[in-house]
Image 1 (cartoon, one colour):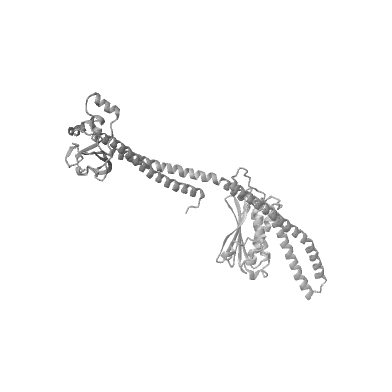
Image 2 (cartoon, rainbow, N blue to C red):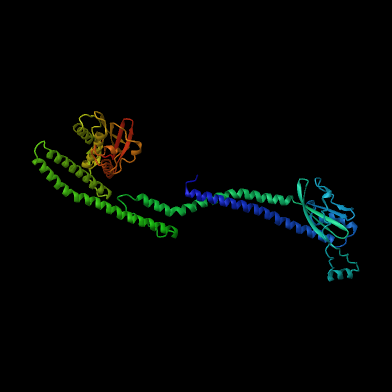
Length: 487
């Protein structure tokens, strides 16, 4: 099945043109044959009519072949056959070179049912010419016919005519081999030229489809340029056809509304985060004072401690939302410096030993692998990855951190043993607020923003985070950042 519109246009052009050329070929060959037969019929009528229109002496027919040779030449006259027959059945003359494969009984053609036409009167000038020479004018005869037929014989076909007068029936046939040669030559030329013509038409159809789709290509290229940081791209095509102009206007209007809505949502997210920071800070300070005033090990102290933990959790969520809104708006502040990614990985391993002393940590990293970026934000990426390995890895399990260089990129892989991420969740884990296991949504700390934020921070540095593997008892994430400096 064709999936390319250009190829569809070319294929449809090829099919339609092929049918048209085929129909034209049949029509042209048929018309050529019909016109040629009509021309031959007119020639045969002219030959036969002059012989039967007037009374001819009996010995006239024996001189008929010589008359043909004088008119057409020796070779050309052989293409004609002539037979003159009295109505009583006596054959007055038959061409000497009668085709062996054609029965002489085929001529004359049946003409008895054709009525006679009126006698033709001699013109005054012709009559005067005969009178001046004192020669009696030939008697004008009543003519019957003509009757035409195409005969097959001797490996050829013959176009035959029979005309009769009151005494004799005259039949003349002409060989159609020359016509068949011309028709065959025309047909062969058509068969050779048709594929070339179809190829040109198919190429033309492809070019027409290409030209017709150029505005669509421009629309697609504009859509490809659309990102969260570049929603102001518009399709500019003042010379577009009016059928496509409406589509362009609709898409530009949609992009305008999308740009406005996105910026409104981004501003709302950032403003909400800013506005909530102050009341949360006040609430945290009040809870800390209440916690200090409460009696040790009292119920009030435990409640204040739990509330303080929730406030702290809200503050972390707000910080992540603020970073995400800045990343969406392309306003994420980056303090780009040369940094040793291998050293940051070893620092992250130290954090694991403090946060989860029950895990066995292995670090495979060179002494130095330089990258360029914001050390604080890259540390935050590693913290989010490590936090996931601790939350969802097996207790008393292992965590492996590996730093390598691949094709000009610095790669940090963080792997752990534990329950694999379900296949249906693997494409969704980078979505914001997505949490694959609802039963652990409260027992496991976090709001479903860690991986989403980590990926946005990595992309802001020109890198990315991917889930390399999650099956069996192994889950592995990879952070890729552009290389910089020396290894």
